[in-house]
Image (tube, rainbow, N blue to C red; front, top):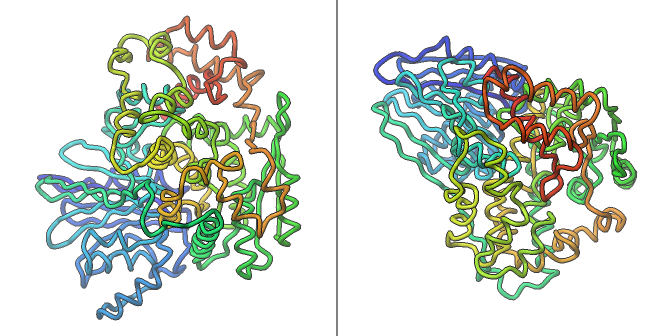
Length: 593
């Protein structure tokens, strides 16, 4: 797990100084080492977190002089040992024990289709010495980020958006369509867009090949069907539960591959508890587990320690937990903003930031239950789709979108408004639902959420907050084989038992009923979920500052109305509208935009 940056120039040498500035901005993602390499029009730089092959032979950029390949890589290839053995059978000799070297030699053997053989999370840039060709790739679920910027006759790329800004010269004007998505869709901005016109991101499951003359070919290499498949015909509830449990067991075991210890973030919910149970069942003893909690607020419990403690006792884990007061949350907001590649409004961003700070004192790698709700239909907006007519896009939009077109027009000033008839977020949903390959409205919603919302909200948020402390997070529920299996599972089995039904049935053999049958929990994180006192003052100051006035993004009367009603102004799924508006301005100011 690391961070990288690079440039492919045209008609000039690469700007090595700019690339090194970009890499310096990634230092917290890779605190264990750094390196750079350049050759003519290409420059690569890397910040390293040592997880696999702790020796200097595993350092990056990885240069394979014999094959004529230079590589920078962020992530982990969990099946790298199996791939290495296969490559050795084809005559390849290795100089390290790293998964990075496996990527380079797999590319030499199989070309760009090598990504289809990787089980893992990854973003990488690979340069061919002899041809000058550049390959950029991102994993199937978009777990690892990859941002792009075009400037000065060059393509720049890096692991975070602020790294690209550090290189200089990036166009930072706000993108009206991206803003429309941000305010409609819980701060989700689908790839390739970001809120800045000059920065784009490579979509998940995508390979981009760039030739020296700037000829480009972009290929999507993974698109599982959300449909009932012949190989699963005749399977009943028990069969599906067994298949899901088996796939999750494999996924959790895969993610123990490491040359340093691996722990688990244990919330006490079904998902993280099931990972702990499966690892314990596989023979893991003294597994390190970690939990965080906050003060209660507005009748909501701020921790889930009752359940995380229960699981820790049940499976004899080495458990640590922290309770965080409101003053520490406020104190961490600045660090969380610094860590955000894009503005993120989810209340638990700062929770992951604080938890990662504590965990990183003793561990470099953890697993978590991230992604189970999107893959197995655990959220509140999924049940209405089970009985929706037609495509189901109308039901999805009514349950999920934060604002209608009129409210957006009331919020934004004319330069940033989009005509109501265009409604890009609503059109995006309809076009995605209309794609072939999904059988039912629920299948269509799960496909959309897995490809878009999951990638650009929870996955991005957790990557940014953990990597801010040099902590690698692994997500068994986003194992691509498990996601493929879940996509084929009948909707009624996912919606059963209040959501994630097939997962709950599978868990009965391993977990206490109290954990399986408990209500779904969320961290309130009161400093940002209920704005009052110092946190409200922070947002008010940002929105009424000279910088905000000069930007002229919001209509002052709409901002005044939100500030007058900071607690009750909520989106359909309960998020603070004021925090969403204020967070964007805070992020822009923090990053000097």
